[in-house]
Image 1: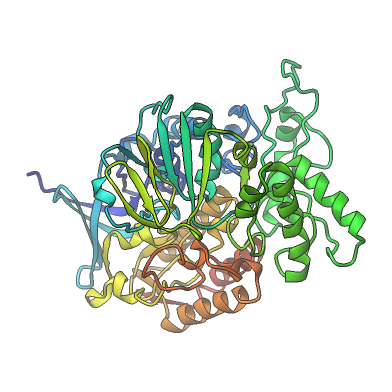
Image 2: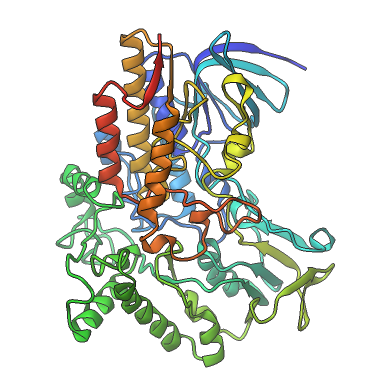
Length: 551
């Protein structure tokens, strides 16, 4: 076995959008860098999530890099909400355009990253036993990249094909004339269920918790050449209907508007309270948002994320839409959530609720009819056995922390990250961890990450980290890590502002509730992108107050 011991200035783990941009920045600065990626190509989440119907819930014109004006202008998106294949194609284009692949070691699973206090470097080892050293380490491992499969009795006994939406095979799966069972009704299930139901002989949906979803109203993007069948683009976030050329002509203002919004996405936010207007005005606003489609539905009124009484007006509107759409009242009743809208990730769909009107789709409510075990033929509930050919786990991820905890990360004095985070993750800004010098996490726990347009947050994180590198080099500083006090205060601040927020009002993966045995702590920063950026800038401008700097 070949055992390297190559030393780099910087090692980046992960070649998704975060890893690619960090690599681009490192090459521009002539930093000796290497990226390790477990997949056989770039793309991160979009490399693995290939399930039927997979697409982004952020507008493609916004879900894109903004570090290069040329890249913005040259890339052509074809749909308002891009599909997984198109997003993966975009990632590959970026890697090729900037010649990034020579710096990436693919099919490389990192098993450990240990800090050597004496030599002040990170010792990194892969599954092959090869060893590498680096002064700095950036964890670009992603928020939603470690799949979660619940422990169910008899799971290994099923004789048919088994899939997970978060780790889909890299080949086309044909469900024609097959019976299929799917566990879960979260975002990936909501996207895939209508597509699978169109092909499958029968689809059994095992629902643990009903989920709110709004129509995507996806459409082809409009170009000025008139070739498109649409004459106008009713775009979220724009005051008028715009062609792509018009958007690109004023891209900088779109980006500026986005960065000044809570979610780093540009859309029209109604500044009124849902409680200060009449029932008729509320209904008109919700209907308008419903017809436009997409997650900006939650921007119908300014207080839907902060006031439960206001939130209930939106929740009730969607509940009524479900009842109107699903023809069987008993099935509709099972699909109606009884919690606040937005506390779980708001999904967007294409004909999700309509799918339950099909004769080849059966909804199994696990609250009334729990799973006892998985059998050789399918699933045995308390009431009956359901037999099928293929089983799909749409059970989500060990979000925010899972990918990091899968690596044996040890900081100063051999402290294990898994031990430090035994009662929940602790970071400063979601960027750095006390006791782990020269280690940075991109969109880690304690950052806005999943509450924002991820690529915008990624670029902000990476820019901040490389500005920090410049500061360290200019001032002859060898080590940087947060102080215990600043890390503790940031964790407490995040929990304090999350408590009154709608997003913490129910069990969800935002709190780690979906993973058995995972400590419940609110994971992302819920203060909004602008407030977070302001805090990061204050710290860098103050000479990195809150960090311990060692010359």
